[in-house]
Image 1 (cartoon, helix red, strand yellow):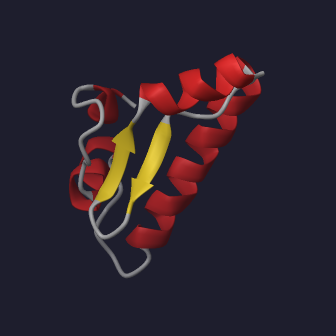
Image 2: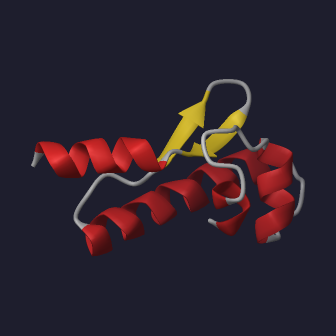
Length: 76
């Protein structure tokens, strides 16, 4: 999460995220990263009771987007 939070709203590449969380680059590493992000989102949503502030940026990676979770929280 720190890797994403350092650059709010800016995409962080999949390779950079893999290195940051210690996933070895293999044929399966893309799927492992997807599962990691899914679990992180689920954990945030369970604890905070709001949408996780992590968005997928097609062909670029993932981004920390605090505005997306705040908009959901305000709508509730």
